[in-house]
Each structure stands twice: as C-alpha cells, then as structure tokens.
Image 1 (cartoon, helix red, strand yellow):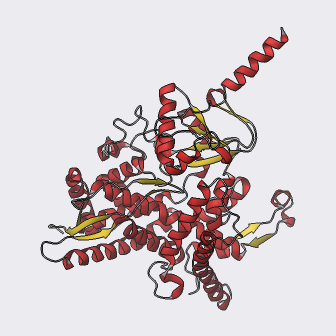
Image 2 (tube, rainbow, N blue to C red; image 1 turned 180 degrees about the horizontal axis):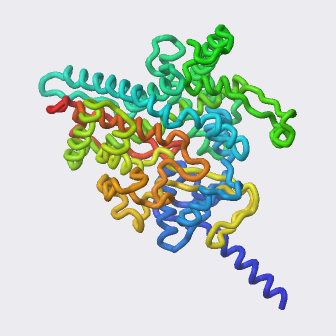
Image 3 (cartoon, rainbow, N blue to C red; image 1 turned 120 degrees about the vertical axis):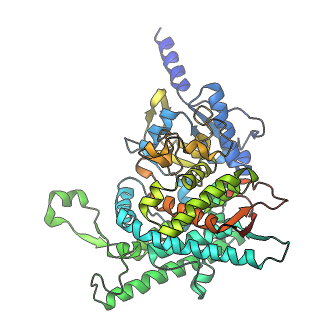
Length: 518
C-alpha cells in the first residue's frame, strides 16, 4: 500500500511544477534546442504567445525548453508574479545570463548585485534621487528639451517649399536622454562634447548594448577573451565608454585632492559622482562591527566600483526613458491621435509659460502622463526580468521551484492580459485618465501594483523611476508644444526587438513641422 502513496505524492509533486509548453503556432520547437530558435527570432512575441497559452489553459506558469540554455519557467499568474517581485524570503537573485551579458558592460553595479551587496549599493545610489535633488534636475531636463525642440524647429523651417522635414525618432530621444542623465548625475554631457572622449560615446554605447543583447540570447557565446571580430569590436567600443567614465572619475578626484577634500569646494558638484567618490562603506566584518563599534572600519569605493555604478546609471538612466519616448512618439504620430497631440501641446505650453516644477509635473499634466503610461503599457522598455532561485521554494498555488531554477517575468505580457486591460493591443491613453486626480498614484491608473509594472516592483523596483517619469513628461510636452509630429506617407510600424530592452528593430523617421499655435 505504501508504494501507492509514494506514487501519488510523486505525481502530485510533478503536477505542482510548471508543465512543459507545447509547440505553439508560429513558435515551433526544435528537438535539440526546444523553443530557443523561436525565442531568438522573436523573444517578445514568443513570451506573449506562451502567456496567452497559460491564460487559455488556466495555468499560472509554463516551462520553456531553451535547449542548451536550460529550462526557464515563465510566471504569469498574478499571485505568483507578486510573490516573485516581493521576494519576502530573499531567494530570487539575478541569473548568470544577465551577468554574462549586461555585466560585461556595467560590471556588478546596483543593477546586477544581489542580497546584502544589492542593499548596500542601492543605499549608495538612492540619495541622488531624493525629492530635493530631483527638483534641481527638472531645470536641466527643461533646458535640454528646449534645445531639442529648437533643433527640430530648425529642421522644419529649413525644409523646401512643399517638402517635409524628418527626424530619426530613436536617435533623437536617445541623445536627449543621455545628455540629461549625464548632466544631472555626473555634471558632464556625454553626448554633446567635441573632444575624442565624448564625441563617439553615444554610438559606442549602442554598439555595446547590441553585443550584450546578442550574448544574452546565445546558447554558446564565444569566451570574452577570444579575439573574434565581434569581441574585438565590443572591447574597442567599451574602451571609448571607459575612457569617458574613468576620465570623469580622475578629473573629479584630482579637483577634490587639490582642495584637500573640502566639502562644497569647486571640485565638488553635489552630484551622484561626488556621492560615490565620498561614500564610506563598512567592510566585510559589518555584522561583527555592529556588535563591537570599535571594530567597525570603513573604506571608500574603489575606482572600479565607482566606474561600475556610474556606467550602470548612465545605461539604465537613459536607455529606458529614450525608448519609452520613442514608442510614445510612434503611437502619438498616427492620424487618430491628432486630438491627443493638441491637448499635450496645451499642457506643454503651460509648462513653458510657468516653468517645470514637481507639482506641475505630477498634478497638471494628465494628458501627457496618460499617453506615456499607455506607451509604457504596450512597450515597456524593461520588458522582461529573470530570477534564479537560490533554494527550493514554493510560490502561491503550490508551484514548486527547485534550486537554480530560472524564472521569467515580463511586464510586456502582463500588460496584455485582457482580463485587466480591455482591448489590450490598442493604444488608448484614456484608460489612464479615469479618476486620475483621485488616485494616490495616478501613474498606475488605478490598476493593481502588480498588474501595471513598467518599472518593476518590490525591492528591485527601478531606483530612478521618478527621475524617468519627470524627464519623459518634460521632453514630450516641450516638444509637442512647439512642433507637430506626424507620419510619412510610406510609414510602417517598426517591429519590436526584445533584447535587453524592448527596442524598435530598425530606426524609423517621423515628419516634423512647426506647430501653428507655437
């Protein structure tokens, strides 16, 4: 009789684990590589198709056979997603796939650190995004936005009679966002300099991002030390980025040293770089030091640690905002959105008349905010996250996870749930206008905190989400207050590329003209 009980419990145990996904239309499975070829071809579409399968079958999760990369568990159930994001037991760490990809560029900064190290690094960076500093950043955001608007106006006015001026949406937004994060957090403009250390920064960053995305999707990437053509190009571009960042560190340290470390001197700007250079961290014997105050010793961050945090913030601080704005312009440029563009322009003119302040950005720009929220719903730049389970754990609903199991969570697929968002594939900013003035957090549109998650949630929620929100509001409203953005006659929607971020697979151009009421 005991064998029957053993067989029963084994069967139940397997039933509580995520079932292996079948081959789905458009996303076939290879015998050796599973769904990996489909995932590499169309990662976002592949996850969306499997999430739809889960909803049809009433599943909270499904296992994806990724061949040589292993088996990943895609989690889509609301309770399970919330449990992973909250991670109350601190067992959900970043996977090795992130470290071998993005880690090549950023090192192990706050984005990739885990456990106590993540807590320590997060505490170092958080002060740069407090309310007082964010208020000071708004002026820089406004200045850069006006300069971009001036450039677009110049292009529009220079167009020949009967002709149309166009601009590259992704490149324009990327340059603006990179300048803002550089000036706000490092008091330096990585995209606007004329010297050799800065003029190629933007293009080098794009090349490095492309390489890290390729590494992350590859089952057997070549070792980083192997001098392949791709590896040589990556290291060449990384040297451009490092030259700029290490140059900033050395210049600031020299200025502080010349002043004898005096606070408030000309060498200290009060930005993130100053905070990193002056940070004092407790050594590895922190727990012992807490019991014995006399034993506590502190050290400053090494140059490499400062570099890693600076590179992380330069990457994360501009890439996501630039992509959200790019996708938003794509959606707003359609003929159906002409009234929304007009209303955002009205809010932008008020912004230009009265100046950008936190109160105005949070309370008096509902149309601009709604358009950005809807773009972030349909095309969240941080579109997928992975987590590696550090020990066996059980999620709500009895879903068992084994040690080293890799989970996938995707804001992109969560935002397509028709049970939450009516007509989920339609761009409809009005869904974020409903009673927005009465909501404690109007950016969430009244949705549950784990239903609408463009910035993640829980202990790893994006540190700079308020910075990004204000930056996007200022740029979008300032541009549309002065220029009209429409689509050329031969326009076709840019396909998505789900890599490290959710990007347009190709650059696309939009038509720009002077707004009649500007």
